[in-house]
Image (cartoon, rainbow, N blue to C red; front, side, top):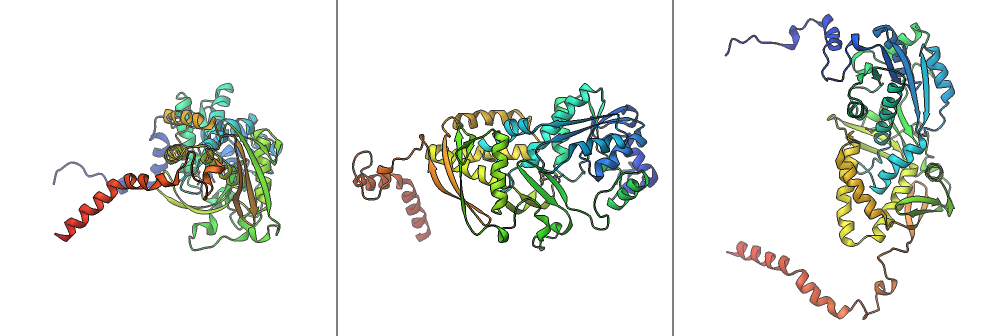
Length: 438
Ligand code: ARG
Protein backbone atom coordinates (compact mmCIF):
# COMPACT_ATOMS: atom_id res chain seq x y z
CA UNK A 1 0.00 0.00 0.00
CA UNK A 2 1.23 3.52 -0.79
CA UNK A 3 1.35 6.21 1.88
CA UNK A 4 -0.49 8.71 -0.29
CA UNK A 5 -3.21 10.34 1.80
CA UNK A 6 -6.50 8.52 1.38
CA UNK A 7 -9.38 10.81 0.65
CA UNK A 8 -12.80 9.59 1.51
CA UNK A 9 -16.07 11.27 0.65
CA UNK A 10 -16.99 10.96 4.32
CA UNK A 11 -14.12 13.19 5.36
CA UNK A 12 -15.82 16.26 3.84
CA UNK A 13 -17.75 17.93 6.65
CA UNK A 14 -21.44 17.98 5.76
CA UNK A 15 -22.28 21.64 6.47
CA UNK A 16 -19.66 22.84 4.02
CA UNK A 17 -20.80 20.54 1.23
CA UNK A 18 -23.47 22.77 -0.27
CA UNK A 19 -21.20 25.81 -0.01
CA UNK A 20 -18.52 23.92 -1.87
CA UNK A 21 -20.94 22.79 -4.52
CA UNK A 22 -21.92 26.34 -5.21
CA UNK A 23 -18.41 27.70 -5.11
CA UNK A 24 -16.68 25.04 -7.17
CA UNK A 25 -18.29 24.59 -10.51
CA UNK A 26 -18.12 21.16 -12.12
CA UNK A 27 -18.49 22.63 -15.59
CA UNK A 28 -16.97 25.84 -16.94
CA UNK A 29 -20.38 27.33 -17.70
CA UNK A 30 -21.78 26.95 -14.17
CA UNK A 31 -22.09 30.32 -12.48
CA UNK A 32 -20.19 31.12 -9.28
CA UNK A 33 -22.34 33.22 -6.95
CA UNK A 34 -20.19 36.33 -7.41
CA UNK A 35 -20.66 36.20 -11.19
CA UNK A 36 -24.44 36.35 -11.00
CA UNK A 37 -25.92 39.84 -11.27
CA UNK A 38 -28.83 39.59 -13.66
CA UNK A 39 -30.51 36.28 -14.42
CA UNK A 40 -32.73 35.26 -17.31
CA UNK A 41 -35.09 32.70 -15.78
CA UNK A 42 -37.03 30.28 -18.01
CA UNK A 43 -40.34 30.72 -16.25
CA UNK A 44 -43.39 28.47 -16.61
CA UNK A 45 -45.42 29.91 -13.76
CA UNK A 46 -45.44 26.55 -11.94
CA UNK A 47 -44.26 25.87 -8.39
CA UNK A 48 -40.59 25.11 -9.13
CA UNK A 49 -39.86 28.17 -11.24
CA UNK A 50 -41.95 30.46 -9.02
CA UNK A 51 -39.99 29.41 -5.94
CA UNK A 52 -36.86 29.83 -8.05
CA UNK A 53 -37.77 33.39 -8.98
CA UNK A 54 -37.69 34.38 -5.29
CA UNK A 55 -34.84 32.07 -4.34
CA UNK A 56 -32.48 33.54 -6.95
CA UNK A 57 -33.16 37.07 -5.72
CA UNK A 58 -32.47 35.99 -2.13
CA UNK A 59 -29.49 33.68 -2.64
CA UNK A 60 -27.63 35.62 -5.32
CA UNK A 61 -28.86 39.15 -4.60
CA UNK A 62 -29.47 39.24 -8.35
CA UNK A 63 -32.14 40.77 -10.59
CA UNK A 64 -34.39 38.34 -12.42
CA UNK A 65 -35.80 38.72 -15.94
CA UNK A 66 -38.32 36.02 -16.92
CA UNK A 67 -38.99 34.39 -20.26
CA UNK A 68 -42.03 32.21 -20.96
CA UNK A 69 -42.21 30.49 -24.34
CA UNK A 70 -45.47 29.55 -26.02
CA UNK A 71 -44.97 26.31 -27.98
CA UNK A 72 -48.69 25.62 -28.18
CA UNK A 73 -49.26 24.15 -24.72
CA UNK A 74 -53.06 24.01 -24.50
CA UNK A 75 -54.95 26.17 -22.02
CA UNK A 76 -52.07 28.37 -20.84
CA UNK A 77 -52.86 31.95 -19.74
CA UNK A 78 -49.69 33.92 -20.47
CA UNK A 79 -50.96 37.19 -19.01
CA UNK A 80 -51.48 35.42 -15.72
CA UNK A 81 -47.97 33.94 -15.88
CA UNK A 82 -46.44 37.38 -16.55
CA UNK A 83 -48.45 39.00 -13.74
CA UNK A 84 -47.27 36.32 -11.34
CA UNK A 85 -43.63 36.87 -12.37
CA UNK A 86 -43.92 40.61 -11.76
CA UNK A 87 -45.66 40.00 -8.46
CA UNK A 88 -42.73 37.80 -7.39
CA UNK A 89 -40.23 40.54 -8.15
CA UNK A 90 -39.15 40.02 -11.77
CA UNK A 91 -37.65 43.30 -13.05
CA UNK A 92 -38.67 42.48 -16.61
CA UNK A 93 -40.92 39.78 -18.11
CA UNK A 94 -41.11 38.36 -21.63
CA UNK A 95 -43.53 36.02 -23.37
CA UNK A 96 -42.66 34.77 -26.83
CA UNK A 97 -45.16 33.08 -29.11
CA UNK A 98 -42.81 30.65 -30.85
CA UNK A 99 -45.44 28.28 -32.26
CA UNK A 100 -44.69 29.09 -35.88
CA UNK A 101 -40.92 28.76 -35.48
CA UNK A 102 -41.37 25.57 -33.47
CA UNK A 103 -43.59 24.03 -36.13
CA UNK A 104 -41.50 25.10 -39.14
CA UNK A 105 -37.95 24.70 -37.86
CA UNK A 106 -38.26 21.89 -35.34
CA UNK A 107 -41.40 19.78 -35.87
CA UNK A 108 -41.24 19.82 -39.68
CA UNK A 109 -37.68 18.42 -39.86
CA UNK A 110 -38.83 15.79 -37.33
CA UNK A 111 -41.72 14.84 -39.63
CA UNK A 112 -39.35 14.51 -42.60
CA UNK A 113 -37.13 12.30 -40.43
CA UNK A 114 -40.11 10.22 -39.18
CA UNK A 115 -38.61 11.04 -35.80
CA UNK A 116 -39.43 8.52 -33.10
CA UNK A 117 -37.09 7.61 -30.25
CA UNK A 118 -37.21 4.24 -28.53
CA UNK A 119 -40.06 2.94 -30.73
CA UNK A 120 -42.72 5.29 -29.33
CA UNK A 121 -41.57 8.79 -28.40
CA UNK A 122 -42.11 11.49 -31.07
CA UNK A 123 -39.73 13.86 -29.26
CA UNK A 124 -42.08 16.77 -28.56
CA UNK A 125 -40.14 17.85 -25.46
CA UNK A 126 -36.76 17.11 -27.02
CA UNK A 127 -37.68 19.32 -30.00
CA UNK A 128 -38.89 22.17 -27.81
CA UNK A 129 -35.87 22.49 -25.53
CA UNK A 130 -33.28 23.70 -28.05
CA UNK A 131 -35.71 26.39 -29.25
CA UNK A 132 -36.55 27.49 -25.70
CA UNK A 133 -32.83 27.66 -24.87
CA UNK A 134 -32.05 29.55 -28.08
CA UNK A 135 -34.74 32.13 -27.26
CA UNK A 136 -33.35 32.37 -23.72
CA UNK A 137 -29.95 33.22 -25.19
CA UNK A 138 -31.50 35.91 -27.43
CA UNK A 139 -33.45 37.52 -24.58
CA UNK A 140 -30.54 37.24 -22.13
CA UNK A 141 -28.34 39.13 -24.57
CA UNK A 142 -31.00 41.77 -25.29
CA UNK A 143 -31.64 42.42 -21.62
CA UNK A 144 -28.07 42.35 -20.34
CA UNK A 145 -28.30 39.12 -18.34
CA UNK A 146 -25.09 37.30 -17.44
CA UNK A 147 -26.74 34.02 -16.42
CA UNK A 148 -29.55 31.74 -17.56
CA UNK A 149 -31.54 29.78 -14.98
CA UNK A 150 -33.83 26.84 -15.68
CA UNK A 151 -36.02 24.53 -13.61
CA UNK A 152 -34.75 21.14 -14.82
CA UNK A 153 -33.72 18.49 -12.33
CA UNK A 154 -30.37 16.72 -12.38
CA UNK A 155 -31.97 13.43 -13.41
CA UNK A 156 -33.50 14.30 -16.76
CA UNK A 157 -32.67 14.89 -20.38
CA UNK A 158 -33.97 18.45 -20.41
CA UNK A 159 -30.98 19.88 -18.50
CA UNK A 160 -28.75 18.32 -21.17
CA UNK A 161 -30.72 19.86 -24.03
CA UNK A 162 -30.90 23.33 -22.49
CA UNK A 163 -27.35 23.55 -21.21
CA UNK A 164 -25.82 22.07 -24.35
CA UNK A 165 -27.70 24.68 -26.38
CA UNK A 166 -26.67 27.63 -24.21
CA UNK A 167 -23.06 26.48 -24.01
CA UNK A 168 -22.99 26.07 -27.80
CA UNK A 169 -24.69 29.32 -28.81
CA UNK A 170 -23.50 31.61 -26.03
CA UNK A 171 -20.23 30.56 -24.40
CA UNK A 172 -20.16 33.91 -22.58
CA UNK A 173 -23.31 33.13 -20.58
CA UNK A 174 -23.33 31.24 -17.29
CA UNK A 175 -25.97 28.77 -16.16
CA UNK A 176 -27.62 27.96 -12.85
CA UNK A 177 -29.97 25.03 -12.25
CA UNK A 178 -31.27 25.58 -8.70
CA UNK A 179 -33.33 22.35 -8.56
CA UNK A 180 -30.06 20.37 -8.85
CA UNK A 181 -28.57 22.05 -5.80
CA UNK A 182 -31.17 23.52 -3.51
CA UNK A 183 -32.08 20.19 -1.88
CA UNK A 184 -35.75 21.12 -1.40
CA UNK A 185 -38.39 18.44 -1.87
CA UNK A 186 -41.95 19.30 -2.84
CA UNK A 187 -42.99 19.83 0.78
CA UNK A 188 -40.08 22.18 1.44
CA UNK A 189 -40.87 24.07 -1.75
CA UNK A 190 -44.48 24.51 -0.65
CA UNK A 191 -43.30 25.70 2.75
CA UNK A 192 -40.90 28.12 1.05
CA UNK A 193 -43.72 29.33 -1.20
CA UNK A 194 -46.01 29.91 1.80
CA UNK A 195 -43.28 31.81 3.61
CA UNK A 196 -42.60 34.07 0.64
CA UNK A 197 -46.19 34.74 -0.45
CA UNK A 198 -45.98 32.61 -3.59
CA UNK A 199 -49.44 31.38 -4.58
CA UNK A 200 -49.60 27.56 -4.80
CA UNK A 201 -52.13 26.33 -7.36
CA UNK A 202 -54.32 23.30 -6.66
CA UNK A 203 -54.30 21.06 -3.63
CA UNK A 204 -51.09 20.65 -1.68
CA UNK A 205 -51.84 17.26 -0.16
CA UNK A 206 -51.25 15.13 -3.24
CA UNK A 207 -48.41 15.92 -5.64
CA UNK A 208 -49.51 16.44 -9.24
CA UNK A 209 -48.08 14.61 -12.22
CA UNK A 210 -45.03 16.25 -13.73
CA UNK A 211 -46.31 17.55 -17.06
CA UNK A 212 -44.61 18.95 -20.13
CA UNK A 213 -46.52 19.77 -23.27
CA UNK A 214 -46.56 21.61 -26.58
CA UNK A 215 -48.39 21.34 -29.89
CA UNK A 216 -46.61 18.05 -30.76
CA UNK A 217 -47.51 16.19 -27.54
CA UNK A 218 -47.77 15.95 -23.80
CA UNK A 219 -45.91 13.90 -21.21
CA UNK A 220 -46.78 12.84 -17.69
CA UNK A 221 -44.29 11.51 -15.17
CA UNK A 222 -44.24 10.80 -11.43
CA UNK A 223 -46.75 9.43 -8.90
CA UNK A 224 -47.88 5.84 -9.72
CA UNK A 225 -46.31 6.07 -13.19
CA UNK A 226 -43.02 5.19 -11.46
CA UNK A 227 -44.53 1.85 -10.43
CA UNK A 228 -44.05 -0.25 -13.56
CA UNK A 229 -46.71 -2.75 -12.52
CA UNK A 230 -49.35 -0.03 -12.13
CA UNK A 231 -51.70 0.29 -15.13
CA UNK A 232 -52.60 3.87 -16.11
CA UNK A 233 -55.21 5.57 -13.96
CA UNK A 234 -57.82 7.48 -15.92
CA UNK A 235 -56.96 10.90 -14.53
CA UNK A 236 -53.58 10.95 -16.28
CA UNK A 237 -55.26 11.46 -19.66
CA UNK A 238 -55.98 15.16 -19.69
CA UNK A 239 -55.59 15.60 -23.44
CA UNK A 240 -56.75 12.53 -25.35
CA UNK A 241 -60.20 10.97 -24.86
CA UNK A 242 -59.85 7.54 -23.33
CA UNK A 243 -60.41 5.04 -26.18
CA UNK A 244 -63.20 3.39 -24.16
CA UNK A 245 -65.09 6.69 -24.29
CA UNK A 246 -64.30 7.58 -27.90
CA UNK A 247 -67.13 7.71 -30.48
CA UNK A 248 -68.53 4.44 -31.83
CA UNK A 249 -68.34 5.88 -35.36
CA UNK A 250 -64.96 5.71 -37.05
CA UNK A 251 -63.70 8.76 -38.98
CA UNK A 252 -61.36 8.86 -41.96
CA UNK A 253 -59.06 11.89 -42.11
CA UNK A 254 -56.96 12.88 -45.13
CA UNK A 255 -53.48 14.34 -44.77
CA UNK A 256 -51.98 15.92 -47.89
CA UNK A 257 -48.24 16.52 -48.25
CA UNK A 258 -46.25 18.55 -50.77
CA UNK A 259 -42.53 17.81 -50.85
CA UNK A 260 -42.71 16.32 -47.37
CA UNK A 261 -44.64 19.24 -45.87
CA UNK A 262 -48.17 18.64 -44.55
CA UNK A 263 -50.25 21.26 -46.41
CA UNK A 264 -53.90 20.21 -46.11
CA UNK A 265 -56.14 18.37 -43.67
CA UNK A 266 -59.35 16.83 -45.01
CA UNK A 267 -58.74 18.73 -48.23
CA UNK A 268 -58.51 22.14 -46.54
CA UNK A 269 -55.23 24.00 -47.02
CA UNK A 270 -53.83 25.14 -43.69
CA UNK A 271 -50.69 26.68 -42.26
CA UNK A 272 -48.56 24.18 -40.36
CA UNK A 273 -49.54 25.26 -36.83
CA UNK A 274 -53.26 25.21 -37.68
CA UNK A 275 -52.88 21.87 -39.45
CA UNK A 276 -51.14 20.28 -36.46
CA UNK A 277 -53.90 21.62 -34.21
CA UNK A 278 -56.57 20.12 -36.47
CA UNK A 279 -54.82 16.76 -36.54
CA UNK A 280 -54.52 16.88 -32.75
CA UNK A 281 -58.23 17.65 -32.37
CA UNK A 282 -59.20 14.65 -34.54
CA UNK A 283 -56.86 12.36 -32.61
CA UNK A 284 -58.05 13.70 -29.25
CA UNK A 285 -61.64 12.92 -30.17
CA UNK A 286 -60.87 9.32 -31.18
CA UNK A 287 -58.50 8.42 -28.36
CA UNK A 288 -55.49 8.31 -30.69
CA UNK A 289 -51.87 8.70 -29.61
CA UNK A 290 -51.66 7.23 -26.13
CA UNK A 291 -48.20 5.88 -25.30
CA UNK A 292 -47.14 4.07 -22.13
CA UNK A 293 -43.45 3.24 -22.41
CA UNK A 294 -40.09 2.85 -20.76
CA UNK A 295 -37.43 5.24 -21.94
CA UNK A 296 -33.65 4.99 -21.85
CA UNK A 297 -32.63 8.45 -20.76
CA UNK A 298 -29.36 9.97 -21.81
CA UNK A 299 -28.31 10.27 -18.14
CA UNK A 300 -28.44 6.51 -17.66
CA UNK A 301 -31.84 6.02 -16.06
CA UNK A 302 -34.74 4.04 -17.38
CA UNK A 303 -37.96 5.94 -16.77
CA UNK A 304 -41.58 5.20 -17.54
CA UNK A 305 -43.48 7.94 -19.35
CA UNK A 306 -47.11 8.33 -20.34
CA UNK A 307 -47.45 10.36 -23.53
CA UNK A 308 -50.44 11.75 -25.39
CA UNK A 309 -49.40 12.48 -28.96
CA UNK A 310 -52.54 12.71 -31.12
CA UNK A 311 -51.10 15.00 -33.83
CA UNK A 312 -47.80 13.14 -34.05
CA UNK A 313 -49.49 9.75 -34.32
CA UNK A 314 -51.61 10.85 -37.29
CA UNK A 315 -49.05 12.99 -39.12
CA UNK A 316 -46.07 10.64 -38.67
CA UNK A 317 -48.13 7.62 -39.70
CA UNK A 318 -49.29 9.43 -42.85
CA UNK A 319 -45.84 10.76 -43.69
CA UNK A 320 -44.06 7.44 -43.28
CA UNK A 321 -46.67 5.72 -45.46
CA UNK A 322 -46.40 8.27 -48.25
CA UNK A 323 -42.61 8.28 -48.14
CA UNK A 324 -42.60 4.52 -48.47
CA UNK A 325 -44.92 4.71 -51.47
CA UNK A 326 -42.71 7.11 -53.43
CA UNK A 327 -39.37 5.55 -52.44
CA UNK A 328 -37.65 2.55 -53.97
CA UNK A 329 -36.98 -0.59 -51.94
CA UNK A 330 -33.37 0.59 -51.55
CA UNK A 331 -34.30 4.04 -50.29
CA UNK A 332 -36.87 2.50 -47.97
CA UNK A 333 -34.35 0.06 -46.52
CA UNK A 334 -31.78 2.80 -45.95
CA UNK A 335 -33.63 5.84 -44.65
CA UNK A 336 -34.87 4.37 -41.34
CA UNK A 337 -31.25 4.01 -40.24
CA UNK A 338 -30.72 7.73 -40.77
CA UNK A 339 -34.11 8.52 -39.21
CA UNK A 340 -33.04 6.66 -36.11
CA UNK A 341 -29.75 8.50 -35.89
CA UNK A 342 -31.57 11.82 -36.32
CA UNK A 343 -34.01 10.99 -33.52
CA UNK A 344 -31.23 9.85 -31.23
CA UNK A 345 -29.18 13.03 -31.70
CA UNK A 346 -32.19 15.19 -30.99
CA UNK A 347 -33.29 13.08 -28.04
CA UNK A 348 -29.79 13.30 -26.64
CA UNK A 349 -29.72 17.09 -26.71
CA UNK A 350 -27.37 17.59 -29.66
CA UNK A 351 -29.68 19.63 -31.87
CA UNK A 352 -26.77 21.86 -32.97
CA UNK A 353 -24.51 18.94 -33.95
CA UNK A 354 -23.51 19.24 -37.63
CA UNK A 355 -24.41 15.60 -38.26
CA UNK A 356 -28.03 16.62 -37.84
CA UNK A 357 -27.84 19.14 -40.68
CA UNK A 358 -26.00 16.57 -42.79
CA UNK A 359 -28.88 14.18 -42.17
CA UNK A 360 -31.40 16.95 -42.90
CA UNK A 361 -29.84 17.38 -46.34
CA UNK A 362 -30.61 13.74 -47.05
CA UNK A 363 -34.15 14.10 -45.66
CA UNK A 364 -34.70 17.13 -47.92
CA UNK A 365 -33.55 15.23 -50.96
CA UNK A 366 -35.96 12.37 -50.27
CA UNK A 367 -38.76 14.81 -49.43
CA UNK A 368 -38.77 16.31 -52.93
CA UNK A 369 -41.01 13.44 -54.08
CA UNK A 370 -43.12 13.06 -50.92
CA UNK A 371 -46.29 14.54 -52.39
CA UNK A 372 -49.74 13.00 -52.11
CA UNK A 373 -52.60 12.23 -49.77
CA UNK A 374 -52.96 9.53 -47.14
CA UNK A 375 -56.30 8.57 -45.60
CA UNK A 376 -56.27 7.38 -42.01
CA UNK A 377 -59.12 5.75 -40.18
CA UNK A 378 -59.43 6.85 -36.57
CA UNK A 379 -61.34 4.54 -34.29
CA UNK A 380 -61.21 4.08 -30.52
CA UNK A 381 -57.49 4.64 -30.09
CA UNK A 382 -56.22 3.36 -33.41
CA UNK A 383 -55.01 5.27 -36.46
CA UNK A 384 -54.76 2.98 -39.48
CA UNK A 385 -53.85 3.90 -43.03
CA UNK A 386 -56.69 3.07 -45.40
CA UNK A 387 -56.01 5.05 -48.61
CA UNK A 388 -52.93 6.29 -50.51
CA UNK A 389 -52.59 8.61 -53.51
CA UNK A 390 -49.49 10.10 -55.05
CA UNK A 391 -48.38 11.24 -58.50
CA UNK A 392 -44.93 9.93 -57.51
CA UNK A 393 -45.95 6.48 -56.30
CA UNK A 394 -43.46 3.86 -57.51
CA UNK A 395 -46.46 1.75 -58.20
CA UNK A 396 -48.11 0.42 -61.32
CA UNK A 397 -51.55 -1.06 -60.71
CA UNK A 398 -51.30 -3.14 -63.85
CA UNK A 399 -47.95 -4.67 -62.90
CA UNK A 400 -49.17 -5.43 -59.41
CA UNK A 401 -52.21 -7.48 -60.42
CA UNK A 402 -51.83 -11.21 -59.85
CA UNK A 403 -52.99 -12.49 -63.20
CA UNK A 404 -51.22 -10.21 -65.66
CA UNK A 405 -47.98 -11.25 -67.28
CA UNK A 406 -45.85 -9.77 -69.99
CA UNK A 407 -44.72 -6.20 -70.58
CA UNK A 408 -42.29 -5.05 -67.89
CA UNK A 409 -43.00 -8.05 -65.70
CA UNK A 410 -42.67 -11.54 -67.08
CA UNK A 411 -43.71 -14.20 -64.59
CA UNK A 412 -41.90 -16.83 -66.62
CA UNK A 413 -38.64 -14.93 -65.93
CA UNK A 414 -39.10 -15.31 -62.17
CA UNK A 415 -37.49 -18.79 -61.74
CA UNK A 416 -34.27 -17.53 -63.34
CA UNK A 417 -34.22 -14.65 -60.94
CA UNK A 418 -34.83 -16.92 -57.95
CA UNK A 419 -32.04 -19.26 -58.95
CA UNK A 420 -29.46 -16.46 -59.07
CA UNK A 421 -30.87 -14.49 -56.14
CA UNK A 422 -30.59 -17.49 -53.81
CA UNK A 423 -27.27 -18.78 -55.19
CA UNK A 424 -24.90 -17.68 -52.41
CA UNK A 425 -27.30 -18.60 -49.65
CA UNK A 426 -27.76 -22.09 -51.11
CA UNK A 427 -24.03 -22.66 -51.45
CA UNK A 428 -23.42 -21.53 -47.89
CA UNK A 429 -26.20 -23.77 -46.59
CA UNK A 430 -24.73 -26.78 -48.36
CA UNK A 431 -21.23 -26.10 -47.02
CA UNK A 432 -22.43 -25.92 -43.46
CA UNK A 433 -24.42 -29.15 -43.74
CA UNK A 434 -21.43 -30.98 -45.25
CA UNK A 435 -19.25 -29.81 -42.34
CA UNK A 436 -21.83 -31.12 -39.85
CA UNK A 437 -21.95 -34.48 -41.66
CA UNK A 438 -18.14 -35.03 -41.48
N1 ARG B 1 -38.98 11.76 -21.22
C1 ARG B 1 -39.20 12.80 -22.19
C2 ARG B 1 -37.88 13.37 -22.62
O1 ARG B 1 -36.89 13.09 -22.04
C3 ARG B 1 -40.15 13.86 -21.67
C4 ARG B 1 -39.58 14.77 -20.65
C5 ARG B 1 -40.60 15.69 -20.08
N2 ARG B 1 -39.98 16.76 -19.37
C6 ARG B 1 -40.46 17.29 -18.25
N3 ARG B 1 -39.77 18.26 -17.72
N4 ARG B 1 -41.52 16.83 -17.65
O2 ARG B 1 -37.81 14.11 -23.57
